Length: 197
Image (tube, rainbow, N blue to C red; front, top):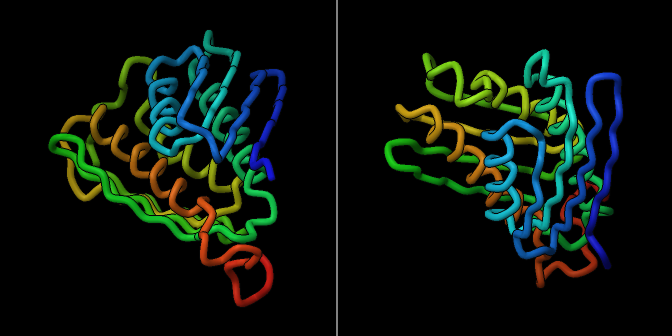
């Protein structure tokens, strides 16, 4: 059974297309007009082994906020669509990733209940290129709301803003990969005592 999601989202501020294949090989085709955001989405696809296409056109003449936010919303919706009925998956995933002086841990439950816990070092550099570093939390909030998952991302330490943000996306990618993979011991089984996710 195919585990693919495709979402098109158009507003007066942005036009977004996201396609994801959870059983891919990490191929990506990303274009949002925000270089560092493209880089993070590429990390998500490659380290999650998701085939990921993202095409966003947004009102970058204002700033990058709408472009990043609406892409994250569409990405979450496409991920949720690709999960389907969640039968036979691991459900839980966890990964800790170092990137030079920075460390990030991501833990995910594909629970159907959106919830985010996010901590990262304060007083980071405010910008990485045209990427506002305060957007990282908002990206995760938007993704979680649409994907309907519980996500905890914790960065206990780090100095370089690029490293701090990037290791979060790498850890998220791996945690999502582990949680969404099929469990060979649970074929045909929904991983919930409630009978619903």
